[in-house]
Structure formats: structure tokens, C-alpha cells
View 1 (cartoon, protein in one colour):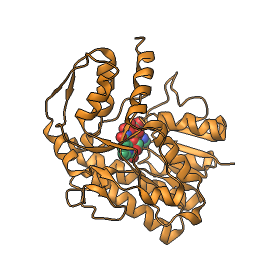
View 2 (cartoon, protein in one colour):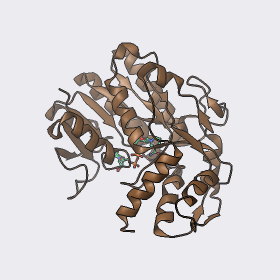
View 3 (tube, helix red, strand yellow):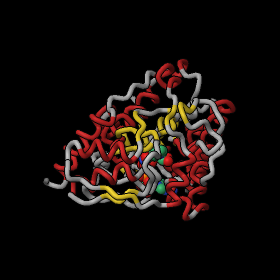
View 4 (cartoon, helix red, strand yellow):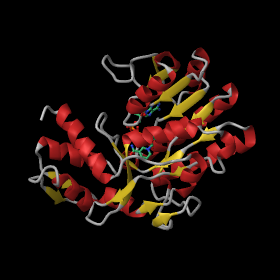
Length: 317
Ligand code: NAD
């Protein structure tokens, strides 16, 4: 039986990962940790929870010891667009939390999952069918800290035998918790605008293709990779994973099939556009498919149908 700790549990991924892990391993075996004190009615509060700032190494070690944790999902991060406004905060959170988790995982012999991102690639990376192993020279502090996190995680595996695993998530689309300030946030916000009957102001240009994924697949990716037999893994940190690639025009037209009077206008955000232009158009995730059976369930059409259905319920439409 595993005892699992999810750090950053109230973020876009954590708020859906915690309930899935609890369903699988039992409520009492999954501890949800938020940077601020837990709030009543939070979806991550059906089991043990605690306050934890992952940059505080001593507090992290105390929590892991208290709950006898043997697997950590570290979701603490400052996302790409937000980190550009305060690079030192981005680096201290992105790398500080990873290093603290690696140390505590080494000391207490715990497994560790720390997501990387398409942001770990940069302008010199082949943008189409981006290979698993390729050039990684990102131009954002988010990307620089993701590359550092990937390298540190591989280092701790090779040097100390810490069982580290991770994926490079693409843009994630979900309907429970809003995204935390990334470059792909538009692909969530567009659904909210459509369902609320508002015009959507798109911050990225037509023709800006990026990899994307629906949250149920993202949660499965994390759990499936952590459950696979270690001997099957040739790569560890981090696997390319994708489910679809689209540009703003494609998602807009897909939503219009369900909401014909939906309108969108372009107002380009130079920072976000610059970041998006430096990221892949579409990744090759063959290694994840071969080494641990990655196989997403949702494409753009099925995700759009589900997003609109769920958001209509949420807004009583
Ligand atoms: P999010 O911003 O929604 O959530 C992150 C959570 O971490 C927040 O609740 C925040 O309060 C918390 N946090 C920040 N600093 C902390 C600290 N010092 N200690 C503890 N908690 C802290 O982000 P998310 O979308 O849930 O992302 C989780 C992970 O997945 C991150 O590593 C992110 O880079 C990665 N990722 C996300 C996406 C995406 O589209 N959402 C895409 C690629 C990679």
C-alpha cells in the first residue's frame, strides 16, 4: 500500500489528481498539501491535508516523516507567463521545490513525480514531431527551471537510485480549476467565454500550433507512469506526452459547432506570443507509448463536447 503526498494540491492539476489518487489508493493514503491553509469545501479535502511550502526543506521532511510517505507528486510551480514577471520567484519555486523533493525522496526512499513541460524546449528545438531527445535551450525562466528539474531528477536517479519519473506536459485543458498563468491558458479560457456567451479575445495569433491534452488524460499519465515496472523505463525525466495539436482558429471552429453564435477576436499579447512561438508545434511521444503504454483517450472533438457539457452544468446554462 502506498502513502502518497501531493504538493501544490490546489492547482489546476493537483485539484483533479488528488481525487483520482484517493479513488485508487483510498482517501487516508493520499495527503494533499497546499501552500496556504486548506479551505473548506476544497475538492482536495476528503482526506488528510496539511500546509506545506515546498521551498521549506525542513517542513517538507517533517511532513514526509509524519505521514510515512513513499511517493511524492510535486505540482508546486510558477507557470510560464507568471514567472516571466518575477524570474527569481519562478526559479526559486521551480528548482527549489524539486531539489527539496529529491533530497527528501533520497532520505526517505520515496518515489518522485515532478512534471516538466513543452516549455523545456526552445527556439533551437525542431518544432514539428519534436523528438524525445533533442536540443533544449529554452528562452524563459520557466523553461530553464524545467530543464534543470529534468537534469536534477535524472542525476538523483543515476547517482543515488532515487526512483524519479516525469512527463513533459503540453497545455492542459480542464473545467474544475482555472489554469495558473501559463502560455496555453487561452485554450481553457476560450471555453469559459463560449459557455458564458461572451466574445473571446484571443492573445495568440491564428496559426500558433501547440500540443494540448484534456485533464483526465493528464491525470492518467501521471498515475500510469508512476505505476509502471521500473525495468521497462529507458527514459525517466522527462517523457514527451501529447494528445492533440491545434491553433486558436481550429479550437474556435470546433466550439462553434456547438455554440454557433460564439465570436472571437485577436488581440496579440507579445510576451505570450513570443513564448508560444518558441515551443513545439507538435511533439513525438513514441517513447512514452512504447515504454509505459501512454495512450490518451480524448481528442479535440471529444474534449470539446465534454468541456461544454461540464461548463454548462457549472454555470447552470
Ligand atoms: P498551478 O499554478 O495551477 O498550481 C500550482 C500550485 O502550486 C498552486 O496551487 C500554487 O499555490 C502551488 N505552489 C506554488 N508555489 C508553491 C510552493 N513553494 N510550495 C507549495 N505549493 C506551491 O499549476 P498546475 O497547472 O497545476 O501545474 C502543476 C505542474 O505541472 C507544474 O510543474 C507545471 O509546470 C506543470 N505543467 C502544467 C501545465 C498546464 O497546462 N497546467 C503544462 C505543463 C506543465
